[in-house]
Every structure is written in C-alpha cells, then in structure tokens.
Image 1 (tube, rainbow, N blue to C red):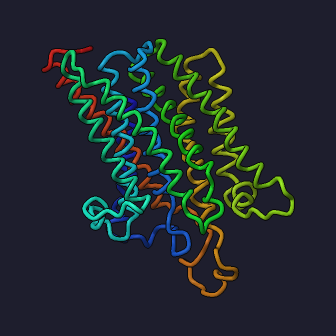
Image 2 (spheres, rainbow, N blue to C red; image 1 turned 45 degrees about the horizontal axis):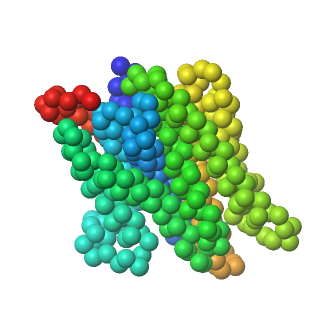
Length: 366
C-alpha cells in the first residue's frame, strides 16, 4: 500500500513537469547555451551507473553462489531492476535533447569515434545479452546461462567506467580531462547499485545472508570512493599557486550544499554510520540514502565542468539569461525528475508481475 501511494504521488506530481516540457519545450529549464546539461543528464548518468552496478554485483553473486543470490528468481529480479534503472535514465536524456526525434540516428548512423555513440551501442549490447539471459533463466539446465552472464557482467562494468571516460576525453576541460573519472564513475556505480539492490531485496522480504553481503559491499564502496575523491581534490588543491576554479565551485561556490550536505553528509558519512550498526533497519535507511544521494557525485562532475568559461571575459561579452555559466535546476526539472523515479518504480513492479506469470507457466520458482 505504501509503495503504491508513493508511486501515485510521484507520478501525479511528475506529470506536471512532463506536461510543461512537452508544451513549453526547454524554456522553463535552467540550462542554457554555456551550461547545456543539467539535472536530467545527471539522472541519466546516475541511472545507467545504478543499472550497471546492480547487474555486476548480482551476476557476481549468482556465479559465485553467494547466499541469497543463487536462485534464478533472484537473478531475474536483478535483471528487471537493472532495466528499471535504465528506462528513466534514457527518458531523461531523451527529454534533454533539442531534437529528440533524431535520437535513433546514433544507432542507424553511428560514428564510433564518438564516445557517445560507443556508449549507446554498449548499452544496447548489454540489454540484448541481459534480455537473452532473462529468457534462458526460465529453462532448466541451460548451459548458455553462465557464459552469457559473464559476458553481460563484463559489459555492465564497462559502461559505467565509459561514462567517466565520456568526460575524461574532453581535452578542452581540464577538470574533466582526468584518468580518475572512469574509476570514480565505476566505483560510484557499484556502490549505488549495491545500495539500491539492498533496499529492494529488503522490501521484497529478503532478510538473510544476501543483505549482510550487500551491506559490506556498500560500505567498502563508500570507503573506496572516499579514497578516489580525496586523491582528486587533494592533488588539485595541494599546490597553493594552482588555481582550480571547478574544485572551488564544488567546495565553496553556489553548489557548496550539493557537496557538503547532499554528497558528504547525507550520501557518505550518515550512511556509513548507519551501516556499521547492528540494525538491519538502519542498513536499509543507509543504503537508501546512498542510492538517492549519490546523484550528487554526478552533479559535482557535470555542473562545475560547465561553470567555468574557456575564454576569459566570455560571459560579459553578451548579456542574456541563457548566457550564464551558473546553473540551477528549476521546478520543472525537479518535477520531471520525480516522474522519472516513478517510471523506474513502475517498470520494476510490472516486470516482477510479468516474471511471476512466466515463471508459473514455465513451472519454475527456482
């Protein structure tokens, strides 16, 4: 009942934002010419990261026979959860496009010298293999299941790191042009994916050894992400003569609250404290905070990288509300974000219902 009520509220409120986007285009949004990517692109990168992290951890658990991960029913729920994370991510980036009707061109006429095209094809390759695994899981004693699971698992590790490489190859942006970004994106994906998997498994009534292992993985992920992030920030700030405007924006600029409150306090410190307790209820809340608040790690890469001009004095040369390096998400963007969350919840619920029907017809509950 609580799940249905939450979904209904998110969907109803979110539809207001969708209506504004469809009827008014991009005008109610806060992004512009100098900062063309905003909240929806952050949701996109967070969603595909969660999709990859959920599948990578779930596939590893099934292959290694971890307690709580051995059954095919659990494997199917992991695949469905991964697809449920992909769906709002893709819709988010589609809504961000100026000409969304041209989205199919990246598949029909790809330029594989583009990291964007490479990522799009990798996503589709993963979903094709994962979909085949889902179908084969209804058949008993299928020898193709585990080899395909290894292949899809490798792909699920590749596309979160490739998301970091998407920014890392931009030589004109020194803040993005970092070899650490692929590792940060991969670590964030595994951490937030494990956290969401813990949340969902608990909601589905699983309170066994699988939850214990996911709690450890989330904790280790938080520790690893802290190390990588400290390395990135400390190197940039170590030399007092080096000016790092993007880092300064993250720590002390208009986006300070995204880092200090959402990311550090609510996304890392508080979840870490909750995860070291002996209460499974606390683990659930800690994992939920990680799954939600880790979008801030994407925003802290995406927005500051656009908020500094490549040419000195560029912002003062022309005056217009859309010609600003400072981006703040508008009410319409947040409403659409709520709809995307509701969409992911709906896809997972429908996927679980369909799985129950197909499993019953196939005569398997394993």
